[in-house]
Image 1 (tube, rainbow, N blue to C red):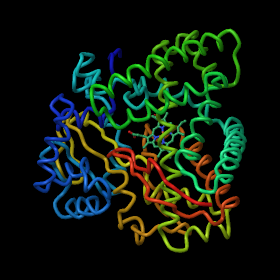
Image 2: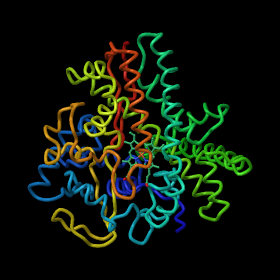
Image 3: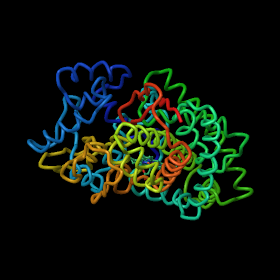
Image 4: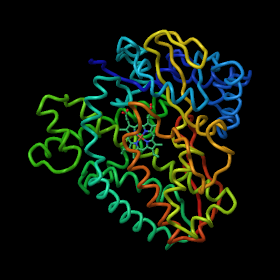
Length: 434
Ligand code: HEM
């Protein structure tokens, strides 16, 4: 059970197949394949990465014609809704290798450079996954969600007061980024005095979902992890002595009851921060971008702000903040007619599944009146289905509704700056005018 440095399956796959354990080789080596037409490699590189949807369409067509596309990078990509969903639900796949290990071996300098942040549930298979996931679930109970809603409404109101007073502002810096971090601070009941440092570490660690860019980035992540663990360790001690309703109190009791180790609950608390921060920031950014870019959609929301929840759902389908994930086969098997060998990995293109014309009519059109008869896969599926989905929806809905009510004339006011990333998608900066 004790694998010192769990990594996300996606981190292992890109590391293994493309990188050969060396940072930098990832982008250099993959680029040569991308230029030669390898569509999977293209997802990692500009210019294709900037708008990956045409590449997804090609991958879906290729899969329909000849089965899942196997890339020279060593990755097999699944692009259709049916195949992605079936793997997510298939218990013969996991996020670790069949023997419970991770491809790169455990620990070691290269390993820590590649993924220095322990992402807890995201890197665990049952039964450890089941046991720890249960500990985090009370944080998302309906009564807690009502509490977060009031926090989200208050914080969004305050952020908008400041932004609208200026007229021109950055939607990401001034709303989409500070909102989720404040809500997660409420979820963990982080005291006000620590909240600024908490936000800084959250920002540093958010980038870890994407893998590591450079040794300097790895060191920054390692430092942020150490600082954050110290804060959580302090909080755990405090809640042990004086328990509240927050998730840290639940985790402290779990350690005392022998249901989890201190390391496990520290990683779990850290995951809540990492998984809930930039993803939600991107959701709000992608929603405003889609509403502005598609004629009539922003006006439709302003005319009826109760459409905010529908607009969030359509954004999750149309331009999901998490574009892909990965799984390893735990036995020899077949996916969509193609053999997949035990312990080899598959890339699950969630964002491509969401644009599959087999399940969504006119899938490249953003339409907040759309009725999704087949659920999108933006929150993944199966045992790793996003634990924070109700919270993400709530924050997105509050942000869009209050924006539409309080800034009905909101419009773009400059060039957005996209995030340089493959897994996470969303603007880093989105200048707007009220
Ligand atoms: C729009 C915002 C969000 C998106 C698009 C998103 C997406 C995802 C996806 C795709 C996964 C599964 C990855 C996989 O299958 O390999 C996941 C897992 C997870 N998410 Fe979210 N997420 C969002 C917001 C949040 C929030 C706000 C929280 C909590 C504060 C959160 C907590 C988690 C946790 C704990 C997991 C791990 C679940 C498990 O492995 O069992 N997420 N999320």
